Image (cartoon, rainbow, N blue to C red; front, side, top):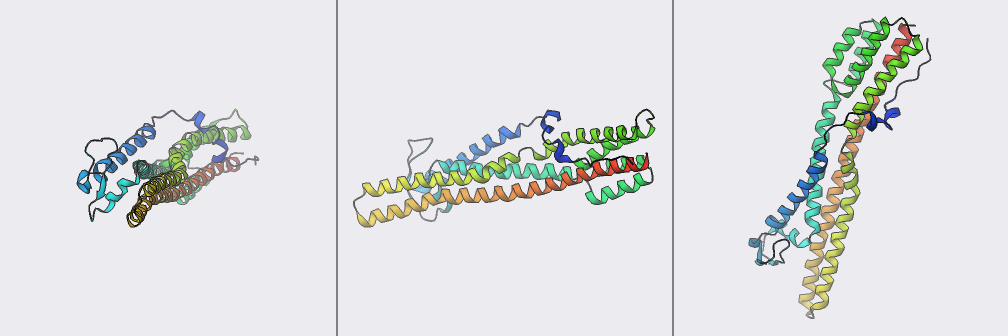
Length: 290
């Protein structure tokens, strides 16, 4: 029997982006811009509505300097957290947007059925030398593992009738076919995860930046006010407003970390399935068609 090393999906990660088809990824730049704009609109026109303040600033447009919130205005207090707040709100929407996008993409890549059960069916058909039935199973399964397996099975079928190449060369051709197909699938699985990984740390830093700016503003107001009781009240309000930035930053970061880990775990599971599919094909061919 030929000495065959199992095909691994990780072996083609380095050149996957080079070999993969160029595909449109407009969402990677449209979504962040739209989310930041949406964050600003919510902060400026909902939280910062003049109706929420007793002394609204009707002259400024981009960042009105409203004063004295009305009682029971709830989240409108976040408006006074400063200009970092809309960026943090937008960052949260970015995390939600790409979490939904990755969920739909990876769900589609998982295929129609259980991957382990699919591989067992393929092994059964190959053991009985029923390649066409194995190809039919790939059509039912779909997804990344099904696509890679189908590509390898087509080459597998061609190599069965090939009388010019040695067994080792045929197995290498099957491996090459699997690697090329894998190189097309991996970028699709990992695309846009960079937004989640970046915001998992960046959101916290933005929150801390907003808090520091808010504290600077609060202590500046404290220094300008000579009245003790009024100064203490202003400082308390300023600190409360500044901490909204911290809360938004930490919350966004936590959601980004959770979703990133969920998706990377699912991708690892798919990668393992691709590895198994390559190993199944090469070992089956090497043992059945010596």
